[in-house]
Image 1 (cartoon, one colour):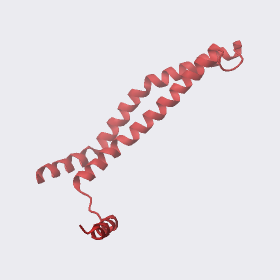
Image 2 (cartoon, rainbow, N blue to C red; image 1 turned 30 degrees about the vertical axis):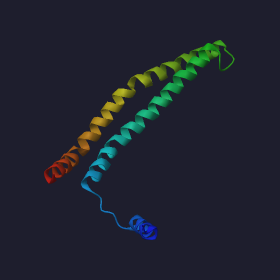
Image 3 (cartoon, rainbow, N blue to C red; image 1 turned 30 degrees about the horizontal axis):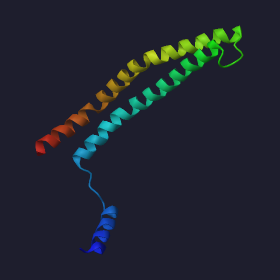
Length: 118
C-alpha cells in the first residue's frame, strides 16, 4: 500500500474544484427556506421566555426589593412574555409559508429534474 500516493490524492481532492450536484443544490434551497423561520422562532422564544421568567422573579420578590412598585411592571413583563410565547408558533407558520411560497417553484423544478434523471 502506497500511503504517500493516497495522501497526495487526498490533498489534491481537497483543493480541486467540486461540482455541486442537483441533490446538494436541492438541500441548500431547503435549508435556505427553513433557516430564517427557525432563527426568528428561536430568538422570539428565548426572549419571550426570559421576559416571562424575569417578570415572575420580580413579582415574587426574588429579584428586586419585592416592593409594590415592582409588582405592576413585573406583571406587565410577564404578560409580554406569555403573549410572546403564545404567538411564537403562528409567527413561525406564517414566515415558513411565505418562504415556501417564494421558493416552491425552484424546489419543485429541481426535484422534478432530479427524479427524471433516475
